[in-house]
Image 1 (cartoon, one colour):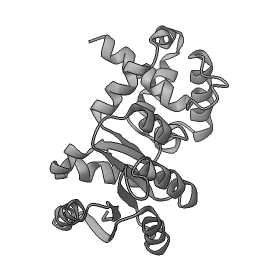
Image 2 (cartoon, rainbow, N blue to C red):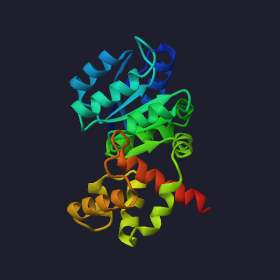
Image 3 (cartoon, rainbow, N blue to C red):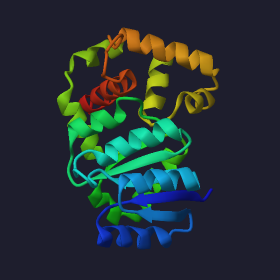
Image 4 (cartoon, rainbow, N blue to C red):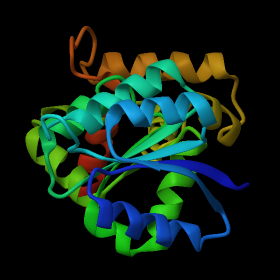
Length: 224
């Protein structure tokens, strides 16, 4: 499928450069390129794209406008995926972006823009409801979390581990159910059990799905 995309970056040269790159990709249709969060939201409301590609820092404060825009778009237009681009690994911003769920969101470093295939895959993944996290971002998040939850993975059943493995690959509950030939209700039950066994009940602002996936990735990395 052709992924319809809205691009947002306040830097004219960057905006035109990325637009030129995406314009050469058959699987991508760039429907509009804008320079600020308000224009981005208007463009999404008008075009209802499959995905948004936005810089993390935009006017007026050049701090978290991209994160705020991503969260607003996901709330107002849940069918639109969002990939946020950042110059550096900023763990706090990544956690804020992922705090309400990993489905349909991505966080990439700007250096990935030069790899058009990787950028296109990220846009396709979030458009399908999956996630796209830069490996360096994942490393930063893993460094932040305690390793205590890793040992709790031993208490998971084989089926719970299978479900968690699918979540770690960026699949939604619906996609996980299809991949494992289960009902969506059964997946939800297993996810709830995983949260409980990993001690991720009533975690407040910390998103349980993110932390469960990080625990799985942490254990997988440590086993190598």
